[in-house]
Image (tube, rainbow, N blue to C red; front, side, top):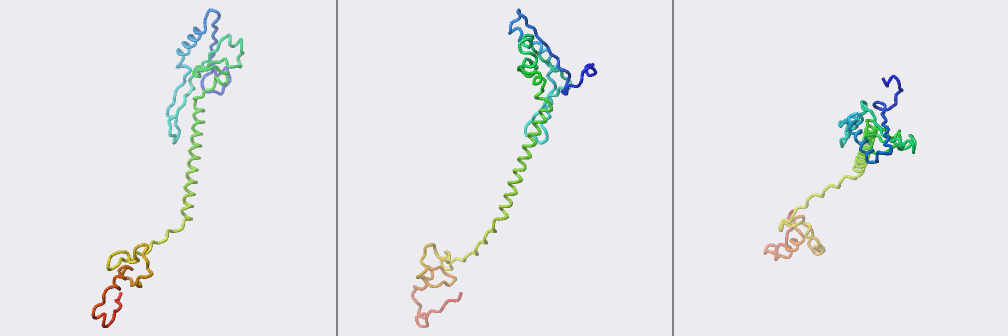
Amino acid sequence: MWRTQYPSTGREGHPPVVVVFNPGLRTGLQALKNRMNTVMELTRLVWSGSYHGDGGGYGAEERDGYYGYADAIPLLFTTLDRLHTSGPRTAVWWWCGHGQWETLPDALTNPADHDAWYARDEQRRHHREEAEQRRQQEWAAERERWAQEPDPAPEPAPVPPCERCGLPIMGPLGYDLEFAPPEDGRHCPSCRTDLRQQYPTLRQAVFGRRPRSK
């Protein structure tokens, strides 16, 4: 019936219902609070809406949901003395579910509805896209760096060891090669020196030393 008599409010759910409490002189502040709490608890199923917990959004890392108020009736509280003192345009409205005094536009806003969830999900999607763009840029920069690096120099061919002692044919580090016999491709400097200093055989003494073939 109300849809035929009133224009659309632009908000989800039914038109709000306002309850104006008039504590008068005989009702104290605590009694007023108790009365408001009693009415709020008795009508919780009417104004609380239904929770949808599967609204995390595609690729959402955390679960997120929203309250649907399509069948809910917003319930607002105020008091007669607040209306007389401050007027209806100030923060004199208590929307059941918000837990604080607000102006009427703020009190009629549903901060946990689907629109609020959609805004959060859009923000999450934007953050994921930015993170993916940063990863793509880092990968492109890494590939570019790899492409500009020169190829590693080939490893030198292994040098055969000395045939006499088995040590490196070039000799140990720090060895003075100035007084060593010329290289023969078979012995290290130390072994070449030892071989030269050996006493000659009778044949070598008579006919002289012959260079050994490599």
